[in-house]
Structure formats: structure tokens, C-alpha cells
Length: 263
Image: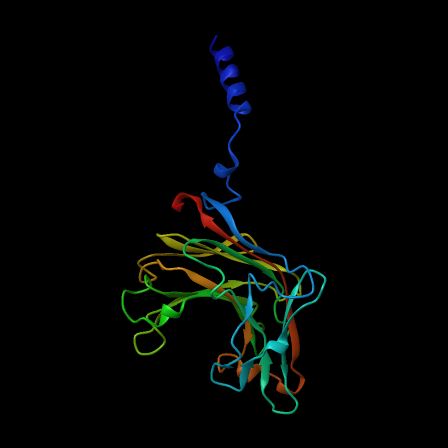
């Protein structure tokens, strides 16, 4: 009788239909997630409902400038961000795009699939930020820069995850960690799960760093927008061969998910 009851219960459970609104699109570290942003970079032009080219500006402390000319879709399903030295000015031009004013979200899982730079001396990155990161109060709660990955360690075979909060001057705070990765010209995925309790970073689906709210000055509570960028600065500049710099990365997709338990 017990076996019959168990079989009937199993049959009832297997035939239950779960409404789509309760089905997660992804589960990461036990957190059910709902897809809120996706771009696979199809077509010939950057989707202006999702991305804008980041403001053209001088970056870091060297002669590096974000330039619209360094960003394009290749028509084969990839976003291409380039880096090269301008022969006329000697400036280093790099590409960057962001979702500022178009897509901003607090908490969830954010992931990019991309190749990395093939030469040292500059780095590429996928990061989340808000203008309020300049606030020097309340720890990371009212604004944190979350660097999902930065590829500044080409020769060492490492990528970096970093958190920045309380501005970038005297009160600036940060925590970071490195993860091993071969710069092999292949596609790799980089992601971060951001919850009210912690940040968990992933490379190619493997957890590489976990930091709790206390270690980060409190996890960020305000929406952040996404940036994909390339740049250089004193961090890597000594390794850069300006005379031959001509490189690029190719981004296959970017996705963002919200925490279903927060909805």
C-alpha cells in the first residue's frame, strides 16, 4: 500500500504544470533568476535600446582615450572593441559601451562571454557602476563599482575581480582577488552573483571569489549600469608596445538576471 501511495504521489507531482512566471530562467548558487537583459549582438549596428557608446573621454593617467571609432558590430554576432595607437597623435584609442540610462539593476546575476586581449599593456573589463559611487558615506551600500573581470595580467595568466566604494580619493576602499586564466584567444564567461548578503564571482562557470557584505562595506543597494571597456594606464603601461598596438576583443553575449526572491 505504501508503495502504491508513493507511486500515485509521484504521478501527481510529475503532471503538475508550473506557471511560466514561477519558472526560473537560471539558478546560480541556489538562487532562482529571471532574465532581464540579453544581447547577442546580431545585426550590423549596436542596439540603441540597450547600449550607447560611452562618453569619449581621457582615461586613467596616460594618453588613452575612449573613442567611438573603436566600437562596432561585425555582422557575425559579435561586438568588437578595439585598441590601437593613433599614428597622427600618438594617443591610444580604445572602445567602450555602457547601458547608462537604458538598463540599470540592483542585485541579480550578470554575465559576459568574450575573448581577451592578445597582447599585454592594456586591459579589457566588464563592470557595473553608478555615478553615486563617488559618495564617501555609507560604505558600499549607496554605490559600488563591481569589476566582474579585468584582464590586466596577460603575461601572468590571471584576471582580476575588484570592488570599489567610498569614492576614489582619500576615503576610497577596495577589495579584490585574482583568478587563473589562459589568454588563449578563446571565448570565456565571467559572471557575478550580487545578493543583499554577498558577491560571488565566476569564471567559465566556476566560482573564483566570494565576499560577504561586511568585507565590502555592505553590498550595494542601488541600481548599477553595465560597462564593457578597453583601456590602459600606469597599471599596465610599462608592458605596452605603442608602436605596434593593434588589438581587439570579441563579445559573444551579455546577459543579466534578477533575483526572483526579490520580486
